[in-house]
Length: 92
Image 1: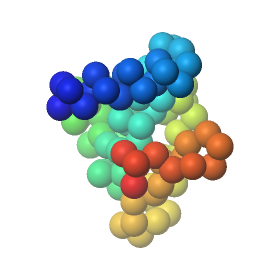
Image 2: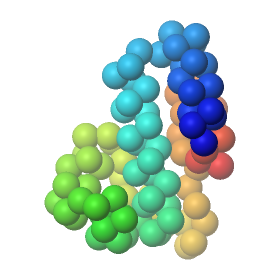
Image 3: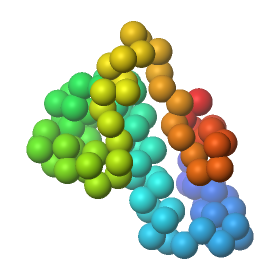
């Protein structure tokens, strides 16, 4: 895992992605995956993250994530949106 992470960081830097954007994108995708796993249940996602449910609500607002997207899919996992219309391989 450590080698994969290092390689990914090198790719980000080579692509000119600034640190602040990389951290924001990581946080967004991390929370996105947890919400998908819990079908939009913010309380369960917050427990897995180790934060209070109000904290995850603030994170969702800050990152522009709508938890209702996860509930409307009847068990199907939503695809993580990536700039430029592409899909992230982690969100697949």
